[in-house]
Image (cartoon, rainbow, N blue to C red; front, side, top):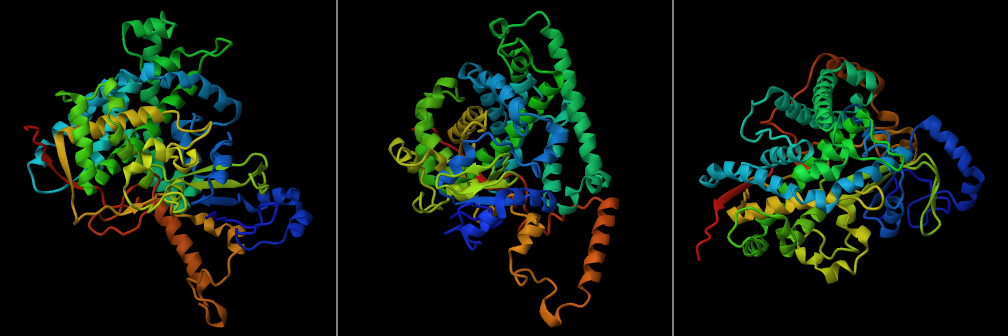
Length: 537
């Protein structure tokens, strides 16, 4: 199904898409008038959910930038990096950074990932001796952060085992955690969409402070590395001495005019890599482990495969990644059911025409529900069931490549998807090599895509298309609430002044059942029970 959040946008009428004025009315109105109205009324949203693959393909095949509403909350932290940049700047940076994710560069990262995974699994020994379940997302998130620090900076932080340690590094890790959480808080708190309200709030103060810590740390590392590399201008000479990290590549890369990246651009790309590379991967790993805990028959097949591939070893190596096809299929099936980023959105900078001639005008924001696409019953038989055999080569060949897009697709797909898949394979394999996973039936995750909270439903153009009786918090008609304006005024005053003065924290003992956030996670955590695996025949 294609769901349009704003009607009267497609130039050939909207048969099958909901009610609309006829084509003649559209032609009389014209796109010029619509474009002018965009400036007055604000952005118009279109949402693709469970959509035809052809519509999704058109969106993802474009280089249109991310929307300038939700993504703008990230810019003070990650700057104008690959995630949010556009135009020639995005094109140049994408071209310069792509060699940094070549398999020759990724190959030595596998050992670093395996070491970080082993540290986490060593910590789990105490849980394996208990009958109590434990929440694993926090463990996995810290592990992926540890791993990405090694791969990005060649920095061994010991952040999984030591809460203190080198103060600068420790404060940086704390700042990255805080910034990820504060972006989620801002996105789901509608008054915080106002720049001045957010800046005056306690959360805004914490965000600025954490940004300063993160930026100072990154800038200091860049300065020291530039000094260390001042006599080494070629990656090949550096690689002959040691393994390359992401920062080496950013500092040494050159375009056809022998121009590199500015310090500001390098910092933006490092901060973007840190943001995109740890929390989303942790989500993918956690949901994969949960899926296998819920499906013990698939878990055992994966374990047997991993043990056979490792041939008595305890940790994964580069060559092992291609030797675990069934485990890889299970990871993909988990990514289908639980995509770490459940939706993406683009801003249309020029009219976009779909395969059937329908067109959306410049200025629209187009959202794509990856979660909905992955559970489209017309594509996936029994879409809510866990069935890794969907990803057998012969089954995948029958589907559109746009039916499964956990890393997006097209020119603006995730540049680090191979990095992420490698890490997921390493961590899942080593976990299954060591532990048996069991679901805790008393603590089932409550899955919520974090973008469910949508105040844009109440943009003037969206409200205008609905019946006035679709939203009646004060009733309606002659017997509606006579004091509704008084009540709304008071709510605005109290909310604004409260946020100006206090930071609000939920009571962990009395959680609501629904809290929309930014990255797909469990509302109440992901709890598992684990026991050691007996490898003796």
